[in-house]
Image (cartoon, rainbow, N blue to C red):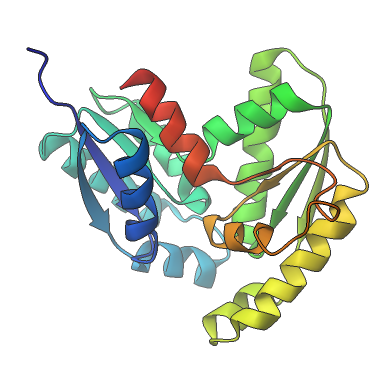
Length: 220
């Protein structure tokens, strides 16, 4: 009998716990899952305007803690701390995955003109950088268009989800006219895609949570 695998999830927002729990129940029901949540990580990144060495060290510590807790595989669900996730992978005996890597790989396979959309500059830059590097790994030339929905994140944080959704939807429609595929740099934007009609979604729009868990299902 094969031993049950354990997945450790590290989040920077408690709102992502049920999102990933549902995906894990659907795609990897026989894998045990535990969560580590610390929203001060993303708050520090946003207030500093970048991932600082001090915050990166804390991310590395959480990954080590997840390994010590018995995780056979670790998924970090925040794109903004991606660089720290990659650094921690070299220090850990179990595989560590940043949530947006499977999505970036999929986009690179799907088209040459790739759009990345975010509501935070601290997420836009790491995801765009990741897509460029994954294209090099795949040996493909791409044209990247990065689009920031300025003000949308502040609207969401102040409780005005409708304004956030309207701004993101407008940016998605505009971007879809000029690219082959769009990546959502933040999981929080995925629900906006469901509000668009098929005619408005001219190109595939990828969100990281489902693609990441499907990727885990293929290896776990």
